[in-house]
Length: 326
Image (cartoon, rainbow, N blue to C red; front, side):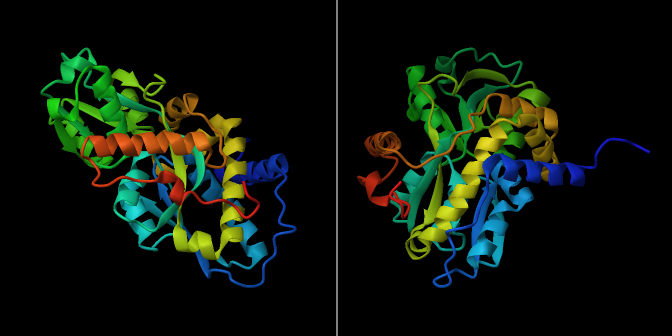
């Protein structure tokens, strides 16, 4: 009989360790009225922190203490469709890269920035045997990325480093699953994508990196976005959810091997690939700062100048502040 602990036992132990490490408490936040029947959270396959949060049931436990009886988790392939659902009120909270909120705000979507976290690493990838060696070599090539995704912004900035614009390439707008097939099938020349797809392409398809977001000229943040009506009606509930996500995020940064195992079990992506992604990840979490707002405003202004969005945006207008003013 094996002496190795079961996966279920490991998860129970991790949950206990997380609660002990973070000092989770529910005292002082009991509200008997103005509560939603449930909180609906959008996730992506790359949202390892939310995967862990869901496994550990810490949001469920916290919200039950407030009187909210259910948490519903809804998976999306990437950011833009998640924000469509968020703006329509089909979900209440979700985590995306820097670009989807710009497109959503430009479209008049009913959402707010609720918290910030570093973006997962992105890369401009080419097949192992590709003759493309520099960013300038992308001229005239088919470059895939998700339209309106964080990779859209990375693609624009990376092309600029090579002296190019979107007009110099053949943009191919593909969601990650479709881009994976196109990349492996030789239908595209380059692919701009984030982890874990970046790590999958490296580990399993021997993709070669032209540049990634370890180059600070390409770096950006990710954001937890909330439906504006939900944030306005239920600020204490939103604050409690974000508090638990923040605790899990900080815990995960010190337990990357355990996180890789949990993410592998939850997604079907192997632990080695997740470990490669987590080795270059920054696990931190906090409020949206003036620096974040300035970065997003610069992105919005850049997209306006390029004709990608139709109107001037004021990012600061849709930044939510917790009841305690943080």
